[in-house]
Amino acid sequence: MVRYNTPLTHPTHQRIGFPQQCWLAFFTTVLVALVCFGLGTIGSAIAAPEPTQLSDRALAQQAQRHQSQGDFNQAEADWNGLLNRYPDNPALWSNRGNIRVSLGEFEKAIADYDHAIALAPQEPDPYLNRGAAYEAQGQWHQAIADYNQVLELDPNDAAAYNNRGNAQMGLENWLAAIADYQAAIDHKPDFAIARSNLALALFEQGDVAQSLTQLRRLTRKYPVFADSRAALTAVLWSQGQSGEAESNWVAVQGLDPRYQDMQWVAQIRRWPPKMVTALEQFLAME
Image (cartoon, rainbow, N blue to C red; front, side):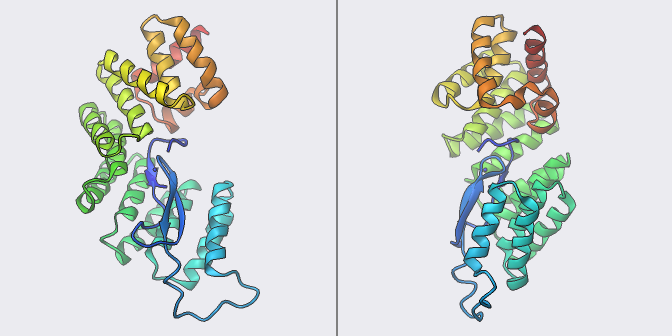
């Protein structure tokens, strides 16, 4: 998860802010929902802003709004403004790093996470977010090292298990990935993307029956979750169940048309090879 950790474009989570503090909320599962971290305490000894200057909370809310609207350049400018006021606040460095990941500026993002870690080495979020940035560059071993550090600090962190599973998939360590996804689910049973990732890894490992069972359960529980429906389409087609595959695909097209783009599926969503091939074969026969 960069912790924000919910299915977006990618199964990795990013986290915004540190849960121990408590400001505003940011986050998503996979780049992720919003977590609470605090401005309430950092400005107590600071003079009030000039009348033309946004308050700390208003600027943070503006940054979140720009981010949710996809205006990452303006969101970066907002975080810059807060960092000018509070250069020793590690959450701000980590959050600007998240924006830079969204902009594809991975080295700059990693530098921001490095700064956050130097300021708050016992906080798990910057390690998780830096791991996601490494993962985005295919630096699997560095990503795993950061996720391991998160789990040393918080052994119950479901996002770290999910993300480490993603990195293990990048290394084609399918059994290790399966173990990590299962651990993520054990710690957070409603973690939908981890369940979908588990099904993908099981299919890659050759356990088609268990993969199909997982995907059926997931689609039944979350009927508008496009990732599980697209994967279910591919598995059903590979098993000769064309009618059910086609009915699921109709739903996928209405939910998220990106699954028709095999480059996106393979390189951004990062499905493993066998599932990519199964979906390609289905699309070729449509």
